Amino acid sequence: MFSKSLLEKEYPALKARVNGKRLVYLDNACTLLKSSSAALAARELLLGCGSCGGKRSVYSLARAAERSLEESRASVARFIGAHSPSNIVFTRGTTDGANLVIQSFPFERMRNEVVVSPFEHNSILLPLLRLEAQGIIKLKMARPSGYAVDADAICSLLGRRTALVAVTHASNAFGGDVDVAKICRAAHAVGAKVLVDDAQYLPTHKEHAEAVGADMLVFSGHKLGAEYATGALYFSDEMFDLLRCSRVGGGTIKNIRMSGGRLKPEYLRSNSGFEAGVQDYSGAASLAAAMAVLEKFGRAEIRSHCGALAAYAAQRLDAVGPVKVLGCAGELSRGAIVSLLPRKAGFSPADFAVYMDENYAVAVRVGEHCAHAGMRLLGIKGTVRLSFFAYNTGKDIDIFAEGLERYLGELDA
Image (cartoon, rainbow, N blue to C red; front, side, top):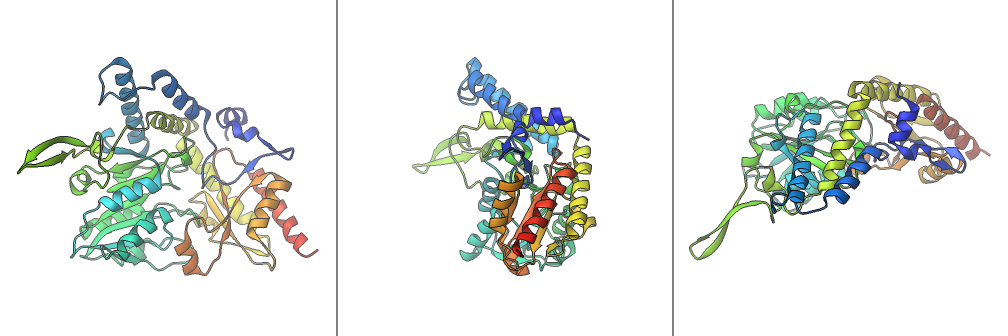
């Protein structure tokens, strides 16, 4: 579907050789291979315009740096379906953005419940568990329904005390996708706000933050092919007035005045009020460039391709007896992840990952995938996770299956 030469030009790591073999990269849920366009955009910004930004200085280089940042902000807004660039706050990634939201949210004594799915990433769950330990919130977790996030189970927990719902749009541990729009409608009906984790959804799905009704939406740039430690946070218009920013500093204040002999800061009620300090201009340029690459390949084409790979992987690997595919092909085809549960004595996920790397040049993820809560609730110690992007093919899955079958066979030797 996608030109091999174009893919290798855009993602040069695809040409890497591991022990003389072609790289088979199946760890895209952790991070996409980095895009040449994204790397070059960051380089050009750093070397051609590495000055202070225009909000602090007015000379030509400063204005150029600020103009680049705002162009990148507009690109992000278009990519996720926000109506205005002013709804976008740049962050260092999903973890950074989630912490910013959770620490800034104005929980009240009579409205302090937070509802989550059982499969939330630690970037969402851990900040909430800390607030619960401090007595600030009460955390309510929906019960697992197989290996999928059950929107109805989440909605059943909503009530007049619900302040926030935090939910992944696609599980990074078990794949598939989640009916976020349904959750948003139910949450808004009881006056609650919704934070959507788009980290796994956005690389292989087209998003429209406003159409699904998200109040806040967070994602990471490195999962799109941009620089590490880049990302953004979407706020609906009203959230800028509701949230009390927990991170303040340069660029976040409108004024500081004297009142009763004391200094009293007046903070900005806009995206600037949530972007303390000098911004990552090169990272924002890298993020915008990575998004442009995905648009060039075609968002619908990427979705179709990755869905077909997930369905094929589920079918192909389900035939390998001593492992269990977690989920059904129909559900998994809506995502870009297939996770396997080893069911053979002596199977070591860590040893298997090394075996696949050394013998088949396959990069695959094993472990708990920062989804410890879901793993504990299901009684699972860890999985083998395959995750797909545009540069993967059915042959990659066949190579993985061959290696898996050989490894299983060697356990009997």
